[in-house]
Length: 156
Image 1 (cartoon, rainbow, N blue to C red):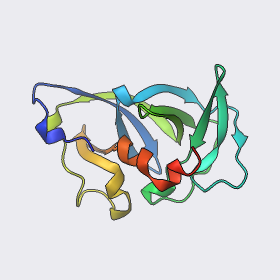
Image 2 (cartoon, one colour):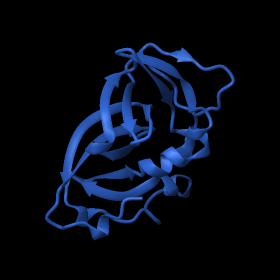
Image 3 (tube, helix red, strand yellow):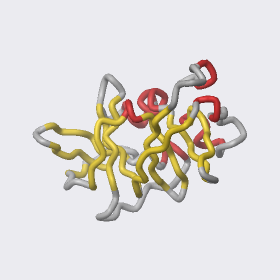
Image 4 (cartoon, rainbow, N blue to C red):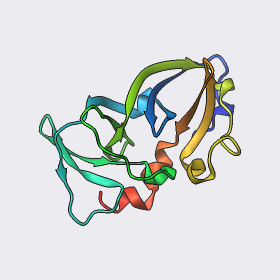
């Protein structure tokens, strides 16, 4: 988990914002390989509810995952206008399906609060921090914890 309180206060974080189940989530730009519209994908039979399938992007095959169940939400309904955020953990790349992408915000690390008590308990272990920006609350995903979850590792 990123420890935002130890960072240099002059450093500015660049966070990409997306929506999932009416909640706003953020990821550090460095963790995102690419953002694409929902591609054609091949469903995976007998997979858990986190994995939707696999897709081909410029000759590379990537898993497509729904992280909604990890965050305590029901499985996401898939719509043609959904987006996919390709997340690079350093060891693997997975496409996370999301409702909408909102671009990027710049924040000072000192504005980031610890998630305990600010997020639903079901998603607390996957949130590295919470930040308020322009009267909206953003939950910063902890990518390293997500990629260590049994649900993601089971089919990669």
